[in-house]
Length: 116
Length: 113
Image (cartoon, rainbow over the protein chains, first blue to last red):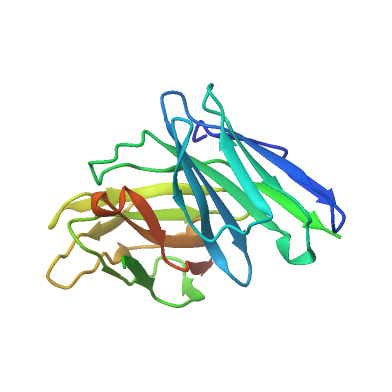
C-alpha cells in the first residue's frame, strides 16, 4: 500500500458527460501528479500540483482540468468525454522537493474510466 | 529535453532465467533514476532507485547501476520467478526540470514455469 488513495476505482459513463476523479496524497506529501495510461499511448503525464499551485503541465487536453485543495487532496475533472478518453488514470504524490533530484513518486491504485 | 528509452517488449523467460531490461536516458544535469513495476490490475510501485553516478539500487533480487558514462540504468535479476511477471518502467527525475518525471514506455515481462 503506497498511502495514496484514489476514488472511484471504476467509472463507467457516456460520451459527452463530465466526471471527477479524486486523489488523496500520502501524509506529508505536497506534490500531486496525474497520469493517463492507455494501451496505445502508454503512461502520459498530465499535470502536477505543488501545495495548491500548478507546477507543471504535460499532455493534458483543454477538456481536462485539475486542482489541489488546501487539504492537499486533488481532483481531476474530465469533460465532454470521448470514447478515446477511456483509460486508467493514476495519481501519484511526492514530497515535492524542487531543488533536489531525489524526489520519489508514489502511485495510487488508479481509476479505470470507461466511456461508452 | 530529458527522456528515457527502454527496450521494447514483450519479454518472455523461463523461471530461473537471467533477466536484463535495458534503459538509457538523456538528461541535462544529474538526474535520479528509477525502476517502477506494475503488476496486473495495480498501480505502479517503486522497485529501486539511484540518485548519483555509480550508485546501485537493489530490491527483491533486482539490481540496477547508474552508469553516467553510458547514460544507462539497466535492470537485472539473476533468477526470475513467475511472480515477477509484470510491466517494468524506467524513469528519471531531474532537479533541472523541477523534478519532473520522465517514464519509458514500459517493458512487459512474462515468466513461464
